[in-house]
Amino acid sequence: MKPLRFAVRKIKWLSFLLLWLSILKPIILSLQLKIYKHTKVTKIVRLIYINGQFVRLCETQNTEMRKLLENSGGWLGKFIDFFYPPFRKYMDLQFFRYGFTGAVNVAFSLLLYFVVYNYVLQQQMLPLGLFTLSSHIASLVITFPFSNFFGFLLQKYVTFTESELRGHVQLYRYFLIVFVNLGVNAIILKIMVDGFHFWTTPSQVVATFFCIFISYFSQKKFTFKPTTPKANKQ
Image (cartoon, rainbow, N blue to C red; front, side, top):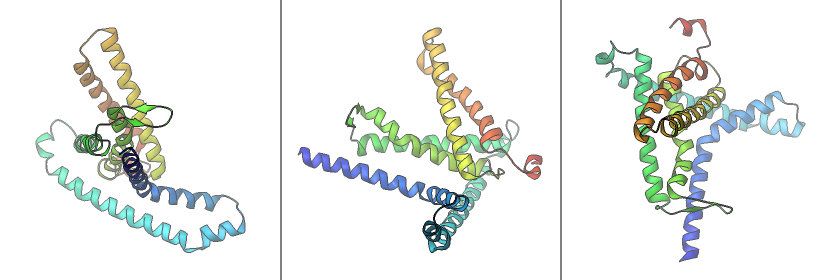
């Protein structure tokens, strides 16, 4: 039984690796294209990456993927706008979209966590050689990048569509804000629970509200900052 369990576990990790590669493939290809366009390399490498079909295929794939994401984001934006009129007096459309997409991302994250915890890890500890992760922490580690990347796509193609910054710059800034929010959340919990001996769950609610506003203004002014006069006027 032990060899069988070991083989099943390896297959699961291999499936996660393949899923990661399928998600990161367009980003990796675009970065490789940029590196070889602006770096002096040998003639053989330049012929392989610049003059060959690889580059044209890379550019075509990126264009098609971008169009698909933009069309999907436009359709989802129209769907969200349908529910906006009752909230018009209380918030602008962009903040409403931010809240709506945030709720969608939370639901996706919880569903993904549930699937990984119960069906992938089967509530078992995850040995990683030098140390072992408990099932709930391992599920968080596995789902964290997927849920946050999904949230990035929602914010980029639904909420903050005016920015013309490069995608890899936006992605870097987005995850930077994510980790800043984690730190802010931890600090608020530390102060309220350990300092003022307040209840843990209400403290997390307070920290969540702080992080929501910090994240919104950070993403608006930093991650997806409009880069053209036309966007700024809007």
